[in-house]
Length: 308
Image (cartoon, rainbow, N blue to C red):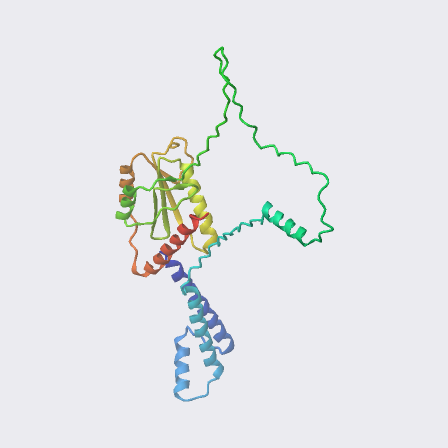
């Protein structure tokens, strides 16, 4: 998964730096050359004869060894993957239903008020109040015009509103293509819906590789999917690059496509031949834990991208 050569080179460089620093320190302070065999022989004779040697000499050795080991640990220590996905907040709207007072309630309330008044104050109304004018309806009434004797019929025109059908998300999952990648050593994942399209293939491989493919769609659609995935990867991963590859079978814009990094095939058989010649590299024992963490991260991205 991760090439270990860079860690080996950093470790060698650190050992050389600490050794040169220690040589400079012992030559300057004690006049002792750590690269000279005669100086080591003289030191052993002093220790055998039990002559007094400055404690600072031994303390300096201990400090140099500690700095060397601690620096190697900082450079080669395993780094945990930090995956931070943005949280999707879903607000629940509550329906505030206003309390509507019915006419019967009003009438009962007015009646109860009149009963409480004394008999002397309750007077009959002298004049009847005019009834309120009827509220015109939102739509004029339909006119039924009778048929004339001449045979002409006046028909009313009715406006019919045809509902606009919402486009359904395209699903392109192809078991045959998934089987090709599965036999080549790739791990096939459930295809998420990206930009309204479910790709025919969504598979991962070793060395942080990802394959996204479609059938009969434009190369621009695959390019937009890869751009959206790359944006999520850059926002949630630190110092880890995921190599995302895309392909299209029988693309409508194959003749005018400008994306050189999108592979194009005429048939599924051409894709089969290409993948058989470029299978997934085998995963070593030391990379199994890293691949498991990478697979778990991709599962998290799949579940997240389906909600946005």
